[in-house]
Image 1: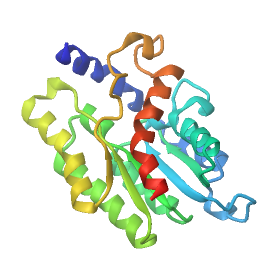
Image 2 (image 1 turned 135 degrees about the vertical axis):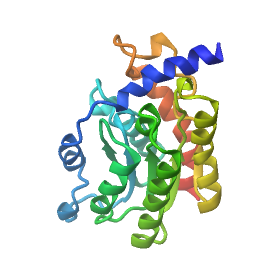
Image 3 (image 1 turned 120 degrees about the vertical axis):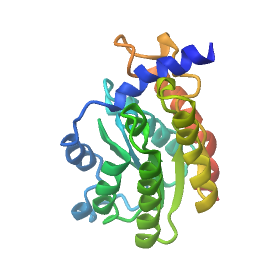
Image 4 (image 1 turned 30 degrees about the vertical axis):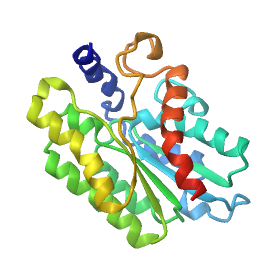
Length: 227
């Protein structure tokens, strides 16, 4: 059963594989993240979700993607943060490193990093992915020393072999420990490989699937924002 679920992960991770980087500017601007637009009424500290189309909620209204559900939870509990959805279809760790420079032009209180799914799908070098993720953390800390980091762990498809998948999986806890970051061990826990929690194409989490993702992330993020 575990291998079947991980095998389905190859399809589920296809969420993030469509090369669509041009959409990022539009998405970030629509969420109020544009650095030039800082003179807004919303002065709440920002939680920036830097990720793939799992973060973007591909196939759903943005209001049903898990970052928006996190915003709903924050609002309902009176926790004064605003969520910025910087999810991008096809995003890799290298792409995230390029984009973080622009995103850091705005204040960032918490950076939630959901990257690596496409690196794994494409069998990209794990050491390079680790360097990219570390550089994202380093640049964030340099720009905003008090920013807190949350890493959302992913898994590589099993067809890449045990050595690769083990090295890939280990990147996230090792980086979290080395940088004092919070860790969600596996973002797609309870969703990967479950047909009724993915859309008709078998690739993209449904609204119900995103509710589970939001609960998984909130379980860790709550401690960060309340600290």
